[in-house]
Image (cartoon, rainbow, N blue to C red; front, top):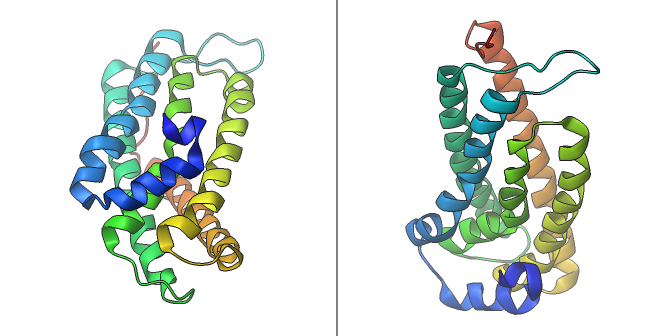
Length: 194
C-alpha cells in the first residue's frame, strides 16, 4: 500500500530491505500476479465480452483456465526478464546492483498494473481502458521515481535509465503479443462457449 500512498518513502524501504528474488516473488509478485489471470478466467467464462451490440462472447472453462495459467507464467517470467535486463543496463548508467534488487524494481513497479487486473472480471474494452490508463500512468511514475533510489544513481541519470527500462517493457509487451498471435496461427488458441 505504501507505493500507492507514499511512493518515495516506500521505495526507500524496499531498497533497505534488500530481499532476495524468491522473497520478492513470494511476498509480492506471485500473489499480485494472480489477480489478472483469475479475474480473466471468471470474466471471460461468466460475463464474456461484447463487440458493438452483438451477443456476449465467452470462453469455455477449460480454455480460460489454460489461458490463465499461461498468462500467469508469462507475467512471472516477464518480471524476472525485465529485472535481468535492468541489471544488465545498470552498468551503462554506472550502477552495479544485485539481481534481486533489479527484480524488486521490476516487480514493485508493476503493482498498479497487477491491481488493475481485477477489472478483467468485467471484460468490457472501454471500461478496462478507462481504468487501465491511469494505472499505467502511475506505473510509469513509480518507475521514474524508483530507478534512482533502487539503482543508487543521480536523478538525471535515473530519468534516462527509467526511459530505457520503459522501452524494454514495451518491447517485451510486443513480444508477448506476437507470441500469442503465433500460437493462435499454430492452432493453440481459445475455445469459445456456444
